[in-house]
Length: 331
Image 1 (cartoon, rainbow, N blue to C red):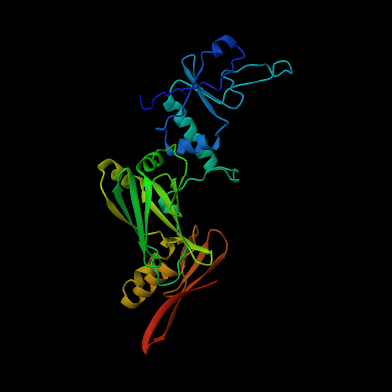
Image 2 (tube, helix red, strand yellow; image 1 turned 90 degrees about the horizontal axis):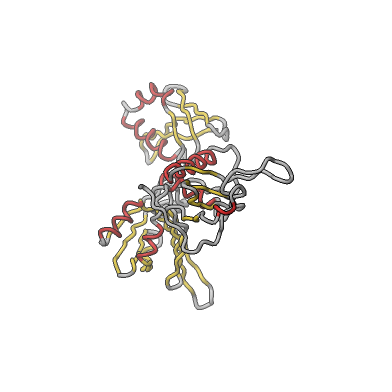
């Protein structure tokens, strides 16, 4: 069996069967398995306190706050309708049902209050730092049983740490069922959140001053779950360089392929175009389509409509007495 059945030690929420009240006393409330997928656990967390799982009459039954285990009633005032949320023969079926709900909620046109949007390392962009300063963060995990000591270093803030986190805390947060964990060590704080494919560490480094003021900064690091799991399984130290993804738009250049082929033949134009692709469209979540407009310039449209369209125009000039070409966006 892929998922284990684990009853609660104390049976507090007693199921209700209007059709067979005596049999309802045999219903056993069980835990949602930790081995359910991250997607399934997003639904379980969303319905926390309003979703319960039972083993009853050879089936698995999911109820709401009413704790009804079976369908009953005819819709009259004397016998109103009542039913469980779901009933099935296996926990694998239940996992698929929960994942289907997650897909439906993710695809909803309107924002569902309280719904936990899916997050992955690819979707995360750190706050933009001042020009010239690297956002990259070197993280070092060192064994210090029964703790893991974490230190960080970046060019803007230098070295910080060592922050002690219990090994058991990291083991717990790796589970799909894990909630966010918040730790405190020597006046510093750490929030650890499990995402679909990674762990998000948010450090808050604080310093107190003689005038009783407190100053500090936050540092975000996203690490693949497999790496953290290897740290615990192999019981070894390791370093990880976190390079945050840049907040850029997706660019569809297929309509302008012929123009780009001409550009790449010239070294100076190729360099200017590469810089434009790197620097000109730092618009998170946007989708841009390029079209040819003149010999080496482009017309573009955006999916969001803000701006609706514009141009990526090639300019020629001089820099330090030498010929210089560059692209800029005109809207």
